[in-house]
Amino acid sequence: MTYLLQQTLNALQLGSIYALIALGYTMVYGILTMINFAHGDFFMVGAFVCFVVVTFLDLPFLPALLLSMAGVTVLGVMVERVAYKPLRQAPRVSAIITALGVGIFLENFTLALNPYPKHIPPLIANTSWTFGGITISSLQCTIIILSIVLMVLLDFLVQRTKVGMAMRAISWDKAVVPLMGVPVNFVISITFAVGSGLGGAAGMMYGMAYPVIDPYMGIMVGWKAFISAVVGGIGNVRGAMIGGYILGVLEIMVAAFLPSTYRDFVAFSLLIVLLIFRPYGIFGKPRPQKV
Amino acid sequence: MTFRGSGGISGIIPAWARTHAHLPLILLAAGFCLSFAIPHFNILDPYVQLILMYMGVNIILTLSLNLVNGYMGEFSVGHAGFMCTGAYISSILTVRVFSAGSGPWTFPAAIIAGGAAAAVLGLIVAIPSFRTRGDYLAIVTLAFNMIVKSALENINAVGGARGFLGMEKLTVLPWVFCWTVLSVWVMRNFIYSNFGRGVLSIREDEVASELMSVNTRQVKLLAFVVSSFFAGIGGGLFAHLLQFINPRMFDIIKSTEMLIMVYLGGIGSIAGSILGAVVYTFLIEALRPLGIWRMVIMPLLLVLLMLFRPRGIMGLKEFSWFVPKADRMIAKSKIPEGRKSGK
Image (cartoon, rainbow over all chains, first blue to last red):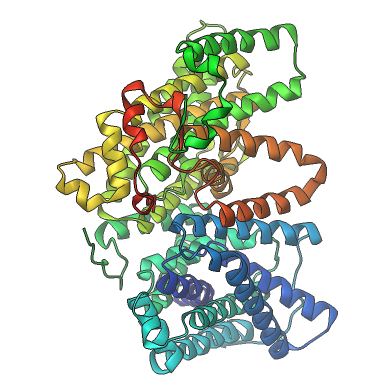
C-alpha cells in the first residue's frame, strides 16, 4: 500500500510535467488546428536555458524559472512569426512539416553548440519528509505544487480574461472573430507565448527532477505529451491536464509492477484501446463536417 | 510529352522523345543492364553505389508513405513501424530459415514475406483508423510505431535492444533497381485504378466520396495495406543492405525522415516521391563534410522550401510517363486551384 502511494506521488510528478507540455500542444491546436511538433523541443530549450542561467549566472530557483520561461516564450513567439505565420493559408500539412523541421533544427543546433549531456546543479535544498512510510522530497513537492499553480493560472486566463475569451472565440470560428475587432495575430502570439512558457517551465522541472538533460530529450517527452493532449481531447485545456496525469500514472504504474522495459509498450497499447472506445479523447467532441 | 498540370515545362523534353512511345521501356532496359554492369565492372565508387542503393530504398519508402499521406490525405507518422516489421521478418527468414545458398529465389521470397507481414500489421492499424479521423490517425500510427519498437526491444530471441545481425549482403544494385521499378509501376497502376480514384476522392472530401458510393472503408483498408506492404519491402532491402538492424533505427526519427522526403518531393505525385527521396539522400551525403551542422542546415532548407512551396517541389503535379495513356487527356482538363486541397 505504501509502495502504491509512493508510486502515485512519482506519477503525479511525471504527470505534472506531461500536463504542462500537453497544454502547449492543446492551446496551439485549439487556436490554429495545427500540431506544433516543435513544442517538445521548446521544452528541451527550457531545460538548457535553465542550465545556462544556473551554471554561468549562478541564479537561485525563482529567477532561473522566470528566465527559462521568458527565454522559451521569446523563442516560441519568434518561431511562430517566422515559420508558421506565412503558412496560415497554406495546406495544414505544410505547417506541420515546418514544425517538424523547426524541431529538428532546434535539436541539432543545441547539439552542435555543445554535444555533451548536462546536469542542472541542485537548486532546492534537498530535504524530505516521511509520513507513515511515504517519503516526499522538497523537489517533488515544488514540482507538483508549482505545476498545479501554473495550470490554475492558465485556466483562469482562458476562462476569465478577455484574452482567454478571444482565444476561445478564435478556436470556435476563425472567420468571424476578426470581424468583431479581435486582433487575431496578437491573440495567436499570446497563445504561443503562454504555451511555450509553460513548456519552458516543464523543461526546467524535468531537468531538476531527472539527472541528465540532452538535446534529444524533447523528442520522446514531447510525443508523450502530445499523446496526453490527444487522450484528453486535443484543443481542450482541462482535457490536456487530465491527459497528462493519466499518462504519468500509466507509465509509472507499469514501470512499478512490470519490468520497466514494458513501459512504453503497455502505455501506447492502452492509448490505442482508449482511442477505439473514445475516438476524440476524453473531453473531445467531434467537429461537425460539412459536405 | 508534357508535365501534367504545368504546360510551361514541356519544352524541356526534346521533340524526338515525344515521338518515341517506347522510350521508357528502352530506358528501363538500359537501366537494368547498367545496374548489373556497375557492380560487376566496378564502374562507380562503392560509396557511390551505396548511395544509389539508399536512394532506391528511400524511393520505395517515400512512395509507400505518399500513398497514405499524399494521395489519401491522411496523416500517418509511424511508417518506420512497418519498415521495421519488414526488416525484421525478412532478416529472420534469411538468417534462420533459409540456409545460405539454398537458391536464388530465397531472397525475394524473404523480402516479400517481410512485406506481407508489414501488410498484415497495416491491416490491424487501419481498423482503429476508421473510428478516428485526421489528426487522430497520426496518434494511432505514432503509437503503433512506438509499440513495434518497444515490443522488439523486449524480444530476446531477435536480439532485443542489442539488435539483430548475421544477414548476408544480399541487397545489391540490380535487386534495388528491380524493386524500385516494380514499386513505381505497381503504385502508378494502383493510383489510376478504380481503387486509386477512391483514394483520391477521400483526400478531396471523405463524406462526399462516401455519398458518391465510394466504399471508403474498403478503399482506406486497401491503401493502408498496399502502403505498409511496400514499406515492409523497403525495410527488408534496408536490412540486407546494412546487414545490421536494431529497434532504435526504426523510431520516430526514421518516420520523420520519411515524412520529410514525401513533403520535400511533393504530395500526391510519383515523380515527386522519386525526386524527394533522391534529393534528400543526395543532400544528406553531400553535406556530410559539414558534420553535425548538416543536420542544422537540412531542416532549415526544409522550412524554407515549405515557406516558398508549401506543397513540395512537385506537389500534385505528375511527370506524364507516370500517367497511363488514357488518363493524359483527363489530366489536361484543369482542376480549379481552390479544390486541390491535399489537406
